[in-house]
Length: 129
Image 1 (cartoon, helix red, strand yellow):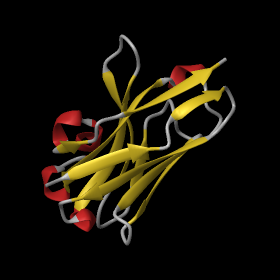
Image 2: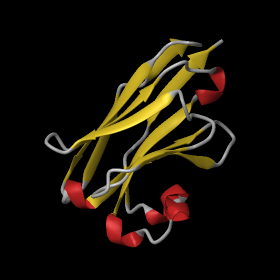
Image 3: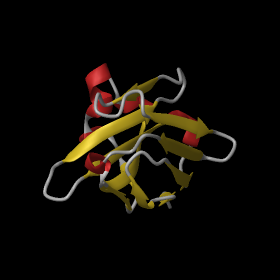
Image 4: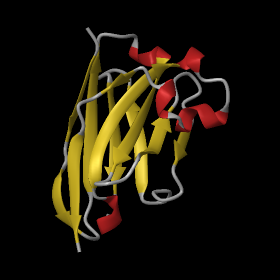
């Protein structure tokens, strides 16, 4: 049974930092790309970042580039999202997502939610101004 369990969310002030964690189980972690998406109130879900399996490449949405850092610990089956210099517009429910690396054929595939097979339950991040 696949499980993705996010933790680390909460309420912070603008400029603060948070680190989200996603503990994974039930699938071969090292063969799967690990991504983060978010959905703000009243908005569509959007890509945030991904850490690819194998090559270990990382990609970020332009809105978080330079502020967020994704990392993964294959020994712990965990992916992290370090979020610095948080802004009110980062307020959203953040979702951990994963998909097998053979489902991704081009760079744009990493940004597509439908390429990810499993999703966590989501965790709320609220940034006050």
